Image (cartoon, rainbow, N blue to C red; front, side, top):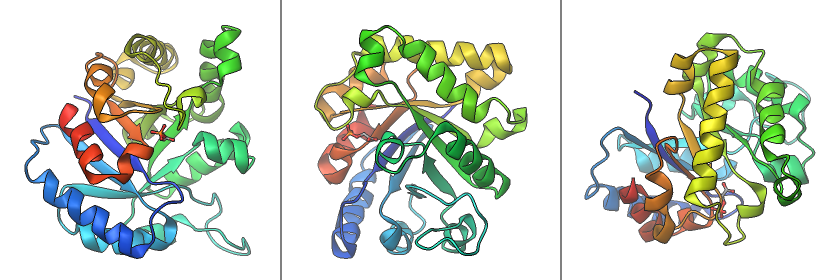
Length: 252
Ligand code: PGA
């Protein structure tokens, strides 16, 4: 059975003090939430990953990185490798976020390399993708999402899927306050499962968790998560407040 996941993408927010305090609050709050079949992940900035790992300790919260270099080591100024992440017990990485694509030139080709490298180095990957508003207006959003998944994931062996979580994040809904309707999310998630079934197997498609991301808030989480193919969320803004993040987790 696939897992429900609520993951907080903190982006470039929170210094070390804030990281500690937010995580302590989440940890405390989680004691009152039943986490049946639900995984909680937080992704602070690189500099605070070590702190985060220490603060979450042996609680149910897992820590993920927001990015990773495809190369194993060497002359890549400013980059972080899988080995460095694993050396501080971080074994999950978010790849393909629309902000990485838009502001840091991460193309499907770059992401294909990064995802393959992360998986080869035994990391778990939360792979993000999603259409822009113009695609939806032109009715090319299914085509676009299919190409993003195909270009990055279709060459992988079937066994890789055990280590992959998908995050559908329509770009027009990220940080805008505009959310895809639960029906729009469900429609896309069902489509994603179908293309994975067609290329791989129904079992793989059925077992992969597909998260929705884009202005998920305590007020809309329950309705979005109630859709059969939505297995949780990748949360930006609302993951920065313990009460909101906890309410979103409780909604699942
Ligand atoms: P948002 O961000 O929840 O602030 O829209 C989601 C994301 O970028 O993952």
